[in-house]
Image (tube, rainbow, N blue to C red; front, top):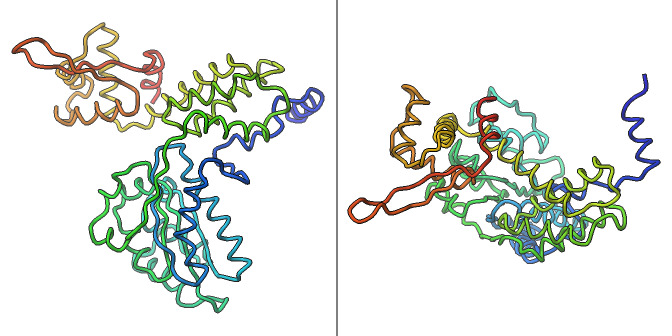
Length: 387
């Protein structure tokens, strides 16, 4: 039996695809030039330049919403630093840790030890043993040189929320180690105790959302690398850019739109990517996004959504009081307090799943929050009942 991938590859060679290389449309792709983030990269470099003189560099924190180039800028600066350190014979390591994958101090330190040549198991040692092993790396090394380590902690708020600020305390109190923290939230330092904030003593760099014109520049550069000539209609990149600008300037969203539009065009056996493909790509992305959000919500928030869905299907105007009664019916005897429901409502609104509107009932009757679903009812029902 012939291999299906051989057949598909032959067909693609006979009828060239719209794509020549999809990799540049992945948000993890690191281009040779990072447009519209030159200033932020320079600011990171200014914080790190001391290491070229064998001085431990400053700690740094990058702030900005999702898709504003924080991770890409830090990796770009990292590559530039590694390159010049090789040429100047400076012994520097820059290690990247995604805190969604390593969510405790133990896991982060074990991973750093393993990256630096010391075998540490994923579990089984005491915290003290891991910390001592990590710090011992900076006392002696096979090169006979002073090792400097810069640790990039991406989505640091996830680790801090789950495990506390011990990792920052350990790293900032270890000789020759500095950290670069990346967070989507300006208030993430509320998760850090004052003694750690003092030892962190970081320099802050803010990444503003991209505007539509900036997103258009980014997409144009990536499109030249990714698509064959003359396959994009002239309005495709402007439309992707405008849609992403409305999503708080999210470059990841813009890249996903462009890539999905191209894939839909390929599926349609179209010779060009059109604005209609972009609109269909938007629907697909939003559909998947809603599923991802709902399926990863805590159980109690899923129950609140189920209660909102039930009231919506009944045609009810949903006030906070009605919602709480419906939520208690869904939760049986495992319900949280009425006050806690307000926290859930705020969180669901921030995620774009629901909206709230405060209305006045008239003189002497007070004000009421009215809650409405902002996602497709059928999609919500299917997702909730498949979990």
